[in-house]
Length: 115
Image (cartoon, rainbow, N blue to C red; front, side, top):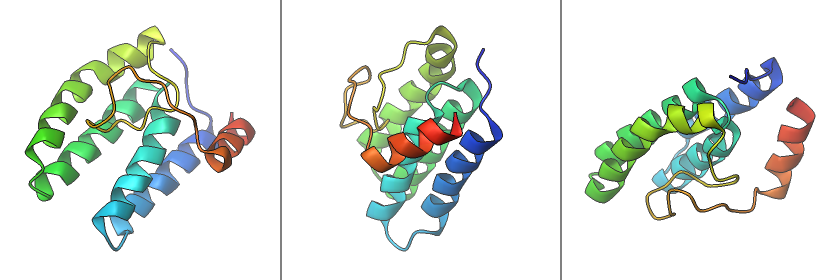
């Protein structure tokens, strides 16, 4: 099992804090998506991110998103442990569970420096 460096944890925590303190829902989701990209290789962080996504979906009464996040909560840790996760995937229900996506350039650079 891979362990996140202190720098990666800091990057993840920064995005999670930004999600909690963002002024609007779109910004909250954007930060949670960035935190998801950072968290994918790490079972605990990955699962924690999907729990936060589930909570936001419930608060916003987004039934489809909440149900999709339940599935993702269940598979997050096993996927991370097995190394089976789609790089760059934002973790949202509107994106396929195993669909790889481009990592935003700024985030890729930060991950590279923090790894």
